Image (cartoon, helix red, strand yellow):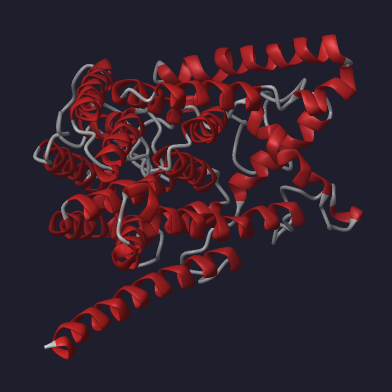
Length: 447
């Protein structure tokens, strides 16, 4: 009997090892810029490269229009991340003769610091998969399965994040590490890591409300402390340039610029900073905009004369307001569940991850690589309700991962149409409902 019960477990472990190993191999290929049919280039990292250079020079033009080095667009993150990325800008490695050929050079020679940044994504992602077990309270024997399912559900998002050199895996690593420390009864340093993530990219600040709902006061203070420390990070570059008093004033001015130029217009649905309706923006407002806004842009590289509405036209403000109402409802559901369902680590983590999903989908800009955060709810649901965890991973793999991973490959234009019509967004909303229902039915905490 022992042999009969051990064989299926061994076979399952081989399956999960193969899934996780193949996923990591594809992500390794993303770091190397292959395969050519899928690979883009770490162009997003050139935004950070330029911002780091500008921060080193005093930050006066941090939020100005991009220069020739920047191949994407204006820097839109808080000043802290520019200060954090700045040390990599000391490592260029390109011959000085090519310095004036930034935009027209083909193929473009990326600085060595950008390549280092891209390769750092792999250890950060490995840290995430390793910490999913502790943060969700998963027994050691089941952690491989949870990591493999999380990799399956987030494969496209991780690939695209690495391929473009974006920042989301760093943010996820800080959040997961912070939650793991909080679960180990170290709420102050754990909260500080999450606060640092919120200072890099604002959306994780929603976990402050989650910790309030869960009664984790020390984690709240840790978040505030971590965010404050990272908001002061630009002083490392500004004080030597301006002196202490003027450096502090310049830091305050840069944060005020970020609020006025980026944060407020983005919150109001500005097309320039919120991505508009063009796919692969998969936010709720972008999806509804493609369906119901007259003249809505459908794809980033649109064909002449092809515009929305895909179904019928409504007032332009309706999709944005419906998105806001849905977001508030989803966030309210998440916080309510965080308040009443805190019996174990899986429940607490699932409630936190639902809040993160809500604010990401409700943000007017939600690019595919933002969905690396789905590793958290998948692992938490595997721990809380294993059968539903399998269903969730399959749902996300089928409706999110496959279309997003293949929509750029020649000959697979129907995947692009699936994104335009909102298959990934609908899949994410269904996944949110599945997770919320599972958490609602979980055993409440004993009095």
